[in-house]
Image 1 (cartoon, rainbow, N blue to C red):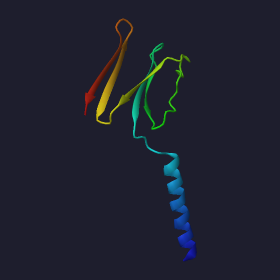
Image 2 (image 1 turned 60 degrees about the horizontal axis):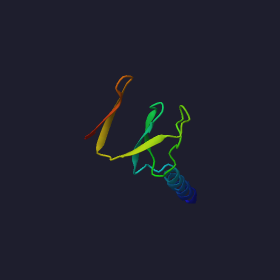
Image 3 (image 1 turned 90 degrees about the horizontal axis):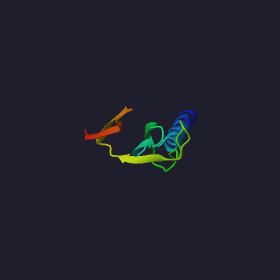
Image 4 (image 1 turned 135 degrees about the vertical axis):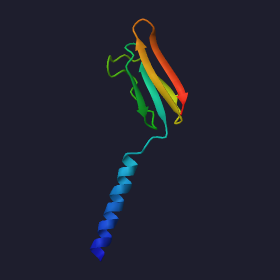
Length: 89
């Protein structure tokens, strides 16, 4: 019986540790490079987003918060530039 209790205790401890290490974000941000237009959705509740573009290494990376009831579409045209469309779900 003690072995079963220890097993469940160990499993619970591992689950708690995993959840603490892999916290699901309460924030979403849209990241976009001003230079090469690289972009990404960033799901993290800390300020540890990249401050330079991973594609061109430019340091002009924009961050825009997105609410959880918003969606967006991204389009790039060489003549017209970047187009972002935000809408409520």
